[in-house]
Image (cartoon, one colour):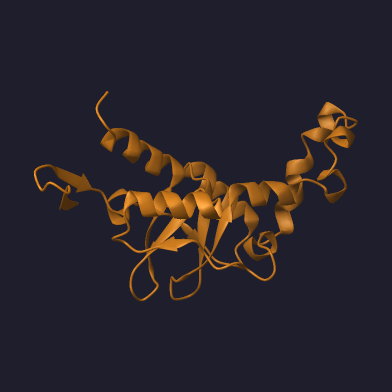
Length: 167
């Protein structure tokens, strides 16, 4: 935590930094099966995962919504009205489709640069990056680009609510 003075120099505010609210997330690699990614997201209650290379450097952030999108048959993705024509028994079977997909299959081509912040980023910086990139998960990387943690939307909002002004 960093202490800063206001302009009058009489009040001190504690600034939380990214490394203080970051979690140690499970990671996946491009060739891992999507089923592994889904299982890790569910078990760890994460909105997405950080995809890393062999040196544990983030190469992408895989949002759960992207995995979900790819499990929906392509003919139904853009037409919710068409989905209503599928009976309930068959509608529940769509989830069995991603069995052969890899994490790399779920990422756009070319793979977008992962959303990252430095460990000393303030919560305002994290919030700004998260909002601008529309990513529910931000990788926290050290000076060498290695993953040191991740900040989730839930963790950020909880930290902001706890550190916020007293009501």
